[in-house]
Image 1 (tube, rainbow, N blue to C red):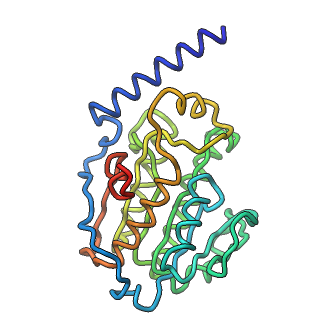
Image 2 (tube, rainbow, N blue to C red; image 1 turned 120 degrees about the horizontal axis):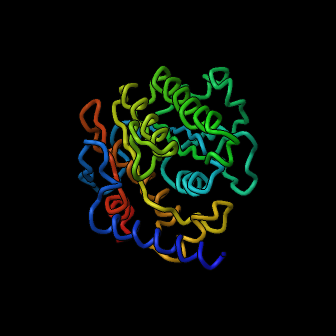
Image 3 (spheres, rainbow, N blue to C red; image 1 turned 135 degrees about the horizontal axis):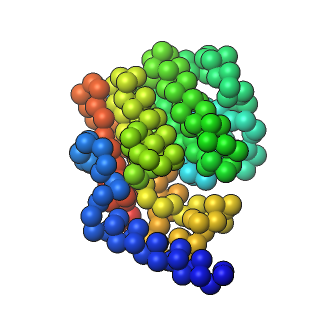
Amino acid sequence: MKKFYFILITSIAFIFQYIYSNSGYFVNTISEKSEISNYKPYNFKHNNMSQGAKCIVIGGTGATGKNLIRELVDSKFVQVTSLVRKEDPSIQSEKLKQVVVDFDRLEDYKQEFKDKDVAFDVLGTTRKQAGSAERFREIELGISSKFAELSKESGVRSMHLLSSAGSNPNSFFLYTKVKGEVEEKMKKEGFHYLSIFRPGFLDRGVGDRWIENIFVKVINTMKVSTLAKAMRIEAENELLNSPSPNTVKVYSNKEIYEIAGEK
């Protein structure tokens, strides 16, 4: 029986690999056209970077989040505020401020959003981890929505969202449907700049998502360190180049690798 399931999962994995590589179906299900910013060398003498930009992060203790926090504290950002359920002792920096919050009462921590230039939403869970479909929606959509509202109300200029390949508010699948709904909520907030990252399968290292652990062995996956690097670079680029207001850009695997300079 185990052999049967392994063959079945491997076959599905190869089908996904073929689709990702050849059709682009899963990475362009919503109408925005993926495009890459016109990158310029970073001298950080433009806009807020001349004084030193500050950012706020949600989801900073997850696989992608940990890597993003490391990227940010090693960058030109002068302050990184990470909203967490529990402090992560594995990352230490004078720039990093970890704030333990009750995510069901995020509005009680509005002061943490003050004077922030950039926000990163890398929140991520699964239905299994959440315990139910309802709780999954509450975490992914409810918390992200409140994070977006508080960011906008506090004057955050740009939002950088980790979503998923296949995200679509009209999807039949819970995960991609909710991810699509989060994207729509972010767009409605009307940030000066919004970037949406839609990676395919991620290599998080050894984890509890068993299907991902199998897929890592049979298809090309993206390392979470690559994704985090691309998100940091995109945020810096936006501050430098000051795009037109209400700009929304969507990035799939190909663009993410190009931004990170790894393919």
